[in-house]
Image (cartoon, rainbow, N blue to C red; front, top):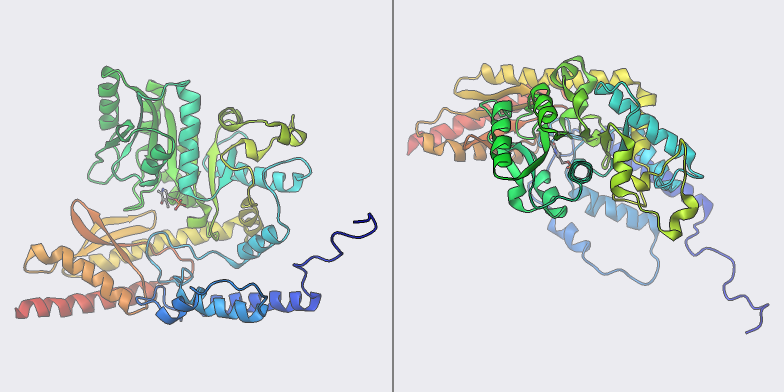
Amino acid sequence: MSASEPVKGEGNPFEIDVNEMRELGYHVVDCLIERLLSAREIPPVRMHQDEEKLEALRKPFGEQPQHARQVIDAALEQVFGNTMNLMHPRFYAYMPAPGNYISTLADFMASGFNVFAGTALHNQGAFEVEQQTIDWLGTQFGWDFPSSGLFVSGGSAANMTALAIARHVKLNGINDRAVVYCSTQTHSCIERSMILLGFKPDQLRLIEPDDCFRIEATSLEQAIHEDLAAGLRPFCVVANGGTTNTGAVDPLPAIADVCERHDLWFHIDAAYGGGAILSREGRSIFAGAEHAHTIAIDPHKWMFQPFECACLLGRKQHWFQDTFRRLPAYMRDTDVTGELFNYRDMGAQVTRSFKAFKLWLSLQVYGVDCFRKAVDDGLELARYAQRRVDSMAEWEVITPATLGVITCRFVGTANPDEADGINQQLAHRLNATHTAYITTTELNGMTVLRMCPIHPAATTEDIDQTFDLLEEFAGSMESVLGDR
Ligand SMILES: *Cc1c(COP(=O)(O)O)cnc(C)c1O
């Protein structure tokens, strides 16, 4: 082979005609906008998936190219036609996450420009955005110093990163006797983190909460005393900043005191509830959060961001680096000092997408006040739902509206043994109308309906029509039962 013979000719096999690029892009944007505009017409969930469409997705990839527009249009039907519609204002399940259009564009940009958010060198624009957004989040929680932190995929990743840091900073290598404390209402991702970090199951101490599903500082401290007496090494408390079940917030100031007294890491899982920090009411609920060492928050929940967007906030940057920083030879050219640091040294990921950008862009475009108002509206709507349940004979509020979550239960059955099944049925029948989506959970051994009406477009009419249906179904089920 002579040197003048090119091994590879010019041309990128992934190149597409520039006109086609534009057309495809505009087409996708048009489809997104259409979906946004019809958010109310598309069911929040479909109770039956379209098996024919799913079957079409199971065919093998071909070696030859296909027409881009056709493949995209087929995906719109087969893939996106078979997903939950989280943009529906009556999507009340879990933590509704409708996203917002500006952040969607931000994701498109971050992906299109393929920003590498692992290093600061040659990347300082992205670095500044992430820094500034983290600092702003810390300020919301009352941190009056420059906050550190790291954007990650979700609350699960943020909590796990926090536990790894807490172990590194507090334990100095002790592992077997180390104990983490949280309540039985704490999100299951804490248990999963313990597995991933190599702890044994009994190293997580679950505390029974009080009647309002909040940890009592006295129960916490008692458990700590018992463990100390048994030669164990308590090192971390995970406080709830809004439980998934009921929105309960553990008594943060009292837990901060306990942590201070026993030299424990004070972590707050505010994955869901943290968004409420933007409202005045939320700020008072979160009083005491300023004492936390680390706080996990999911802007992809109550800050209206598309998935994935979560953040672990930490008081000191060196904690993150002490825990995670490694500098192999193949990375040394991008090492930085001084004001700059690399986010790849702060957590588990080296290659990182630019997740801060969507929050940053949407905060600027809409303005912070728009977010505050949207959170306030959600808090208010949950209270409206509570008042509505209060007004319904044969229904009970089980936990009052707390951080936008309310739980309730139909209690008008002659036979209390049937109540759990009936409430489960009620959720199912409501969801089968394809006009709303709620889920059930279990509290004090009872099946309850759980509702989180925080979609920014949800209205009091949405709440009323939802409960009209629930009442109607409850009435008809009662008469069936009564006939037996
Ligand atoms: C949602 C949630 C999590 C898990 O977060 P992901 O973003 O789903 O990984 C953890 N804790 C609480 C309190 C949550 O609400």
